[in-house]
Length: 125
Image 1 (tube, rainbow, N blue to C red):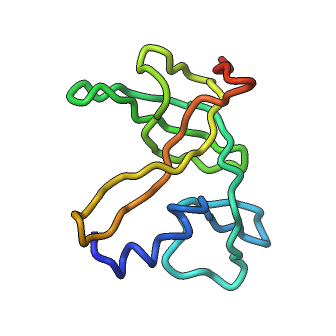
Image 2: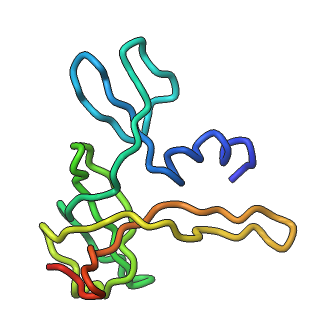
């Protein structure tokens, strides 16, 4: 990823920032490249539930479709959970994780993933 693109999308990657339309109340993620007159940036809670998911066999990880409490559906990798322990309807929360390392003189790329909600160190199902 080039440096300029990385900085353009940092709000949605690091803060899970979407857009809310003031007239309709509709929340979108990721935000469009250009905001309309009635659009305003909105920090999303990062809370939601697994809507659907699939296991990627090659690396044995799960990619899930997450329904955020604000409404948007977001595709993301699950983390901190075994593939067999992911379930539809499972409460999840966003976490920031390192996605790529572009070498000793390069850029570290961080982004969002989702994990099961923890209460007192116990996964809530």
